[in-house]
Length: 147
Image (cartoon, rainbow, N blue to C red; front, side, top):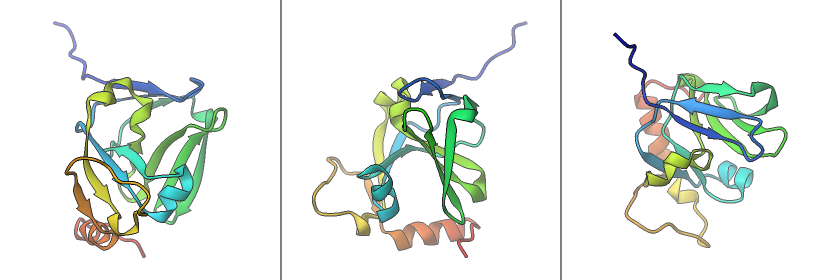
């Protein structure tokens, strides 16, 4: 009898110093328009759904910036690639879809902090849109604290 392996998606930063392998999250991409995400990346932060058990190789090449009491942002020290948003309360990683070739098939399903989106860009399609207050309320209802 052979051991079944769970399917994974694999990705890497621009220089290849950091690689990531994880079970495929839902095939969704989210866009965050908050001011912090826009300042970090120059535009909306695109991410995959949270995962809690990724395999990350090259961790010594990752710099983490504590952007709030409840989140960190990770990037490659070598090439500067944005890698993930780490949500401390759930120990979850939201990886950028550009790391993974397989994510090209994913679709944009949600835009958050839509009330902070500047007028100079917009995404096509009919993705769900939530304000910052709605996002925070949903997280609090799920038991997360932001105090």
